[in-house]
Image 1 (spheres, rainbow, N blue to C red):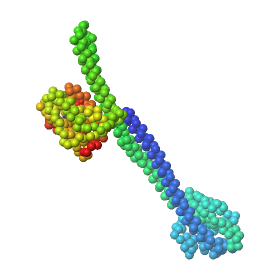
Image 2 (image 1 turned 90 degrees about the horizontal axis):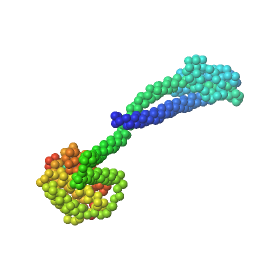
Image 3 (image 1 turned 120 degrees about the horizontal axis):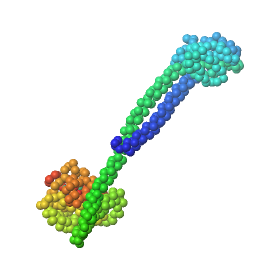
Image 4 (image 1 turned 45 degrees about the horizontal axis):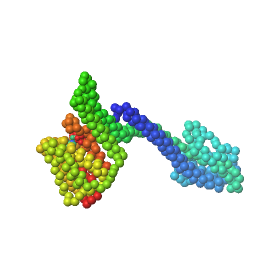
Length: 436
Ligand code: ADP
């Protein structure tokens, strides 16, 4: 496939598009995943901070008497005091800080971990993310404090270091940054492979069409070249008498006949394969088809010095629904082949039988046989085991392709069993409507 420019270009294009689309989807997924991780961690952090700050806020508020003044009992509640550790519970205290601000925003007390150069923020905003001088981030909650008499006292701010989270997110980012190109390379390779896989059947049918065109041109060239040669030699003669003229015309007629037959066969095959052939379906008696053809082709068999006999193994007529003309064509193709490929003195036996609900027609001959490697290919269009011999018999290599297409159009099967030098048996199985 890669030698063909059109196919290799299409494969590249397909693979590239696939890789671009997949890359875009993967990048979006990566971004979404990153956002989801950030969101989930911040949510947990907020909830934790809110719960701890709420508990501390309530405890401190209960002790406040005068605005801006911190009672000794309130100082004891601050988390750096060992006896109040239970307030922060499971929280890793090293990551937390608490500061109490009066109404003017002055720091009255500070507890817990003390970040370097942390800016003071207004207590009016409940949530804030701030940075210390080293650039470490902190997430902070601000809650208003009131005295027991309900006078405004100031604010309590509790913050938590985001260092752990930032480190974790930096690792996730790193994985995504390095993982995405690796994933893209894998996507690219698999796209190339998948594009090749998807194009394989198209390429095969393209090759078949190419082969068919070459074969058809080759078959048409022979009679055309013969006609041309005959005409040219006739034109080269100074004078033609009547006998010579008739001989030339007969030669041209023969070649023309061959061309007409070839084109008719090709048309029939194309119609059968496209299922565009109008089928005149009706119940057909296979006993009649076989016996008529044996009778008709007896003369041909006699001239080839082979014996043609008919063996009916069912005591009742076998009927199938089909196009009678096509069924005659099918069986006659097989008998004519058997006569052509059976040397003088041989025998051809037509067997009519039933098998598993199907009508069975077997054409057995004691002819030259077909090698196992050729048995599948003989049903291909224009395929001939021995081209020279077939050409002398007038065959074009379409007979079995037509037979196979007719059988398929009738929902049956055509198989061959053969041994070189011993003979061949072609078996037609067709669904029958009578008792089988
Ligand atoms: P052709 O017109 O050349 O006979 P067919 O399609 O009918 O083409 O057959 C294809 C090839 O199969 C033939 O060229 C021949 O080599 C082989 N073949 C067909 N029938 C027989 C047979 N009964 N015995 C041996 N070879 C056969």
